[in-house]
Image (cartoon, rainbow, N blue to C red):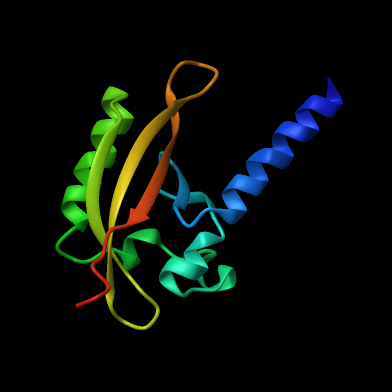
Length: 126
């Protein structure tokens, strides 16, 4: 049993560390509980630069209200959603992302986290 759990954790770590999709786990206070290493490749930030940083500071100002409403709906209604927003790249340009967000239930059947899987949909040729 221990070997299966260890193997499962190893597979999940491998996926999280090698994908170019951005993986984020948010708690009810909208604090980041996990962000994948892909943030370095997509947004240019080192892990240490993102630790403790408010994720909302990276959102485009025009997108903050929409994101907050979407997250509130997910926490209150247990609804999965797809949303688009822009995040600030370390070099100062905006990266457009498409994100699929899924609420995660805790032991007491209330939503404890939201998992966001985001993909860069920016047109880098312009």
